[in-house]
Image (cartoon, rainbow, N blue to C red):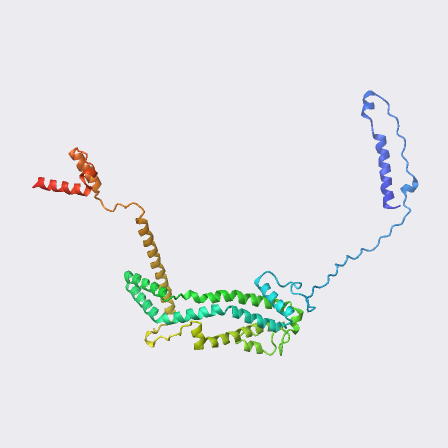
Length: 376
């Protein structure tokens, strides 16, 4: 007997017992005798199972559908299908490399070199501005050093008046010469995120690795996804990390060579004249103050702190001077001439109109003369 037949039999037995014990409440209340229920019977074929059930093994889960790999015009998988080319700056650089590699049919080493040249060329105006600012700052340093020494001497002597005077001269001097020490940081602020984006982009492609980069090099570094086994690129990149990927070392090497070429070009007198780069004047030996590194750093920090305090005082003085022209004049004396005039008027018992008798100062002068004449 199967499990289904057993369940049906138990249900039939329970129904027979329940039908015998069920009492109609209406018949029980009014004394009507209950009629016996007919017995319930089920066919024998219904209570027994004649079919045999076989349990088969659990089927295997279905396999995921096979998606064709997205390839570019060269028949290589695209970088986006490999999880690269995100919306971060490193992904933008990877997209630029892929564009040069696919549409110009350039190997990866050539695409890296071209993008490096484009980046350095776009930074060339900032390099010129940095060189110009550095030359101006170097040429005014002798005079500025003299002002710094005067400020230090005034600080040591405790002469705050001289400190404020020298501080004002330093500010006017730097403004007239159009010199700002922070201007040289402009190139660094722009260049650091660009370098980090290029570094992260190339490292992500080499660590994946991109299949076509395995043969995308040249010469002895055909595989751009492994370190240089001959250490030639690290030596050409002048002390770079030895275990970097060849793609990163190639970028670094090209960037360093471009920097050297730029430095040589900017030394030419004709180029400096055309780009309005002033010549750097070496300071005379007499102006070079011999001091240690720690001592010079401490003096610079102390002078900077005092200069900031003096500038704060000047701003507060300017604010108070402007506020004095808008607010009422504060009372800084015990004698009140207006109150004295009112007392004199009460003592005389007369009311004096200031518009008819003149100003209050004239009235006080007359009163003082009368009192002096009475005493005589």
